[in-house]
Image (tube, rainbow, N blue to C red; front, side, top):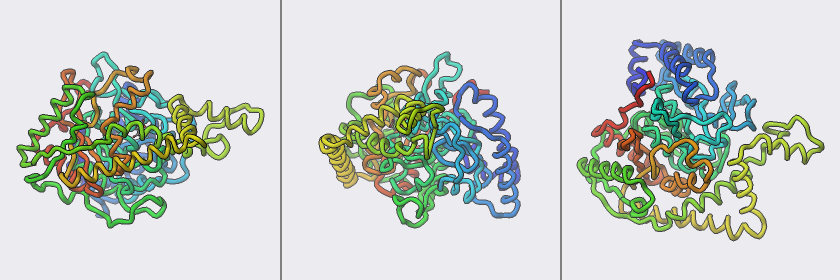
Length: 490
Ligand code: GLN
């Protein structure tokens, strides 16, 4: 039951084989038992979850259920949720109880009737690729559990991925600014989707880099992600960047044949810099797609090597502006002692933010400052346009782009923590997708010699989520990587 698909859970709830309260209890018990070792959850409130489960059971009994009603899930601690503590992984928001719900929370809890199991760990303000920047401590990758080594789950949605991989929740919400859904999904053997920018509302989602941030699901399969995205997506007048488009059923294409599908392989994703074992698994996935009737075409993304440098100008610039609201007066931690207003700002921010967040704020303020704006920020925006144009060219030749999600499998805790550039390179294949605003997925495609999962990335054209999910689903019908789970947790 712990690793059942959302469809199976939905059927069991509808047939009254299990109640939402019973199901929620099972996950809460597992959280209680395993979370001390994994540190995936920052906040759990069993009474609150069970009350929501009781409501879901009433709704099911009244015949008012959606396919997701009564199914528990873990919420990334970046989403404001009424009555829950919302920390964003930071000391700055250690005691913040949101007075309102993010649109994603409203859609999943109230509209779909899902049951939140709690708030899951993340890199501080979503800045990181290993979950090591969280004020609430690092998260252990469940695949390394019991191996004697501590490995990262990826980040910034590291708690989301670890919770789902360890069976503490059947699915989780995540956010992806430069790879934060896809990279942890890859490192934890899961399926994750970052939608087209503007498809999911950002209202109530604590902002990191507003032109890049996008929420999406992390689950065991493309089918589960399709159900979740259908519930999460939709126009929201409270978010000015939300796109006014008709409501979609993202599961509608599941099961369609992949015959004649044109898969583009960018040569830039198949060069140096990727682990041989990751590359071998990606190559086998290409063979599997050929067997399903897909055609392979070579494409070029000539500016993709500039994506990481451009991102590390644009994302910090936006972050420096977004995070200026945490001043200890209107929002966030306030220093206990200070001399005057400037001292209050200085001390509150110095105490409330961690090192990586401070680094980003400094870089952001620098690249936006007079005299440097043209040299850095403007240039980065030009590169961003070139990168989007490269994808537009590539999609003239193919339906979907395929490559690795991350150049390595889960690395050891501490391995990259002292070297920011090494850490930033974890997202070398994911960041261009955010800069272009395209949808991207990661799905499991094998394991390395140490038994650590490998992720395959699929990138679609704008608003092509339904087809992208089917392309992943077709592969998951032919393989069982997504059905493997870490050992030694029971
Ligand atoms: N790892 C990237 C960063 O540190 C991306 C994070 C994200 O997608 N939120 O900025």
